[in-house]
Image 1: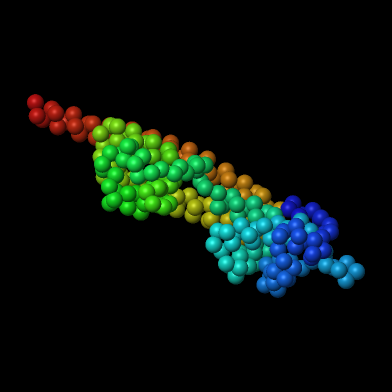
Image 2: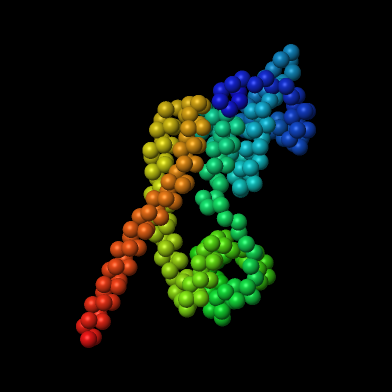
Length: 251
């Protein structure tokens, strides 16, 4: 059965499936015995495999590359009995895709100090790694996970804001961002995913669920940006109102 519920004839023998996937026949049989692969279509005592088996093997490989062991993958497959391997693969890719499409950059300690000055000492770099701003690669090289955040930091530095204040701000923002992200994730699970599971995960609705998740990305970003804009306006007015009051008292 292919994605969308249309029957697709299986035409590959187990040897041909092994060649197409680069696996050994022994490993394919082992996957079948573990319940990771559906049984072949038997015709004239010969088992034939098709697109569904190819997609399932691709799914297994991608999940293994992400650190899932075979038992965890089997449980995932068992929990989605209504999904074709193709739909499950597409949904898994959508969930694992980075929320923001930014390409990380490799930077050296020297480049970081050009941006941050001598504030970029060992303690500051360690703090940046802990916050997920940087990831140590090797030697004096780091991966900057969000170049956009790095540019904002550089601009703050040009405004004279020291790195320690920036990192303290990022830490605080991250705590709030975690709460917002949890709220949106909970919203999707409770309002889309669980009703789908309770309905028996009908195969024809998998594309609908995946589309709902993909549409959540821009909606969440727009909602957060809009609410933040309102909050920032109020905060600035309040802060400067306080400052104006202080100046009047001084006079």
